[in-house]
Image (cartoon, rainbow, N blue to C red; front, top):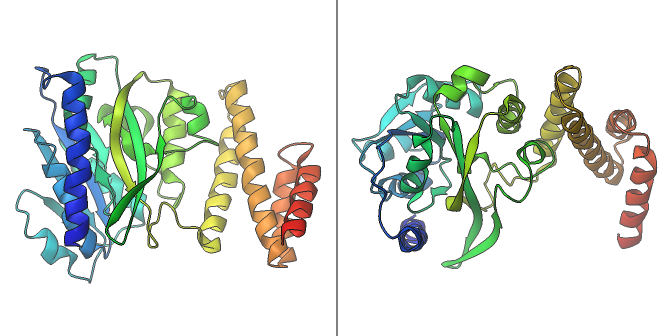
Length: 324
């Protein structure tokens, strides 16, 4: 825990130093209040680094709300060390229900979501705040880093930018690193809260609504969020049970939005592609597991998404057989 906190300070410090070197000074911008919302359930060992990454922003006006779903591992005791935190306790209906509780309780103009096992990038608040001086800007998106810690060594695994692809592509088939985004609180009044029916893909469904609303946003030329890749990560969990739930939610989501006549032609193309990919992934997984009932179910979803889905599935299956 101490090692990860030290790494947090080191990585955040480097990013903050690079930010201030690039911008020369802290902007004399109007100070917007930031509301950081963190859902927690039995992650006591990761809370210190998470909280410290917010404190290390050295930003004068913020609140950090932790929504705890009934932890029994000492999380509440760990949080009690920080009197500035606002802690909401009680059972919830999953992570996105917890995020909705945080949004309902917050009073900052700008909202950001921080997972317990992740970190905010150094200088993120100071970088984002000036963007919101433009009243037409509803969000600001920074870059996201994915890193790991092995034997005390920190390694950057990948880096993602909101400029890598269109917002609609990122919200459907692309990399949806929504934690690197800052939102005006009014966004939730315009497009609604997270839908807790989506237990895994709630952030992607939210970002899809944001993209469809065509609200104006700004891009930040720095890393504002750091995802920790580790064995217990919910973000990078490759367990077949989670992958099945993710695929099912993607199929459900595409069903809903493909029926909406207001959805653009390009959005429809990407939604069908998301549906096709979800069905293909799960069909291949269940073929490997010789689970032909689930294989048939997902194959039906795939065939209905695009005319050439079946040949693609056969091609993938043959390639996997050759490499097995």
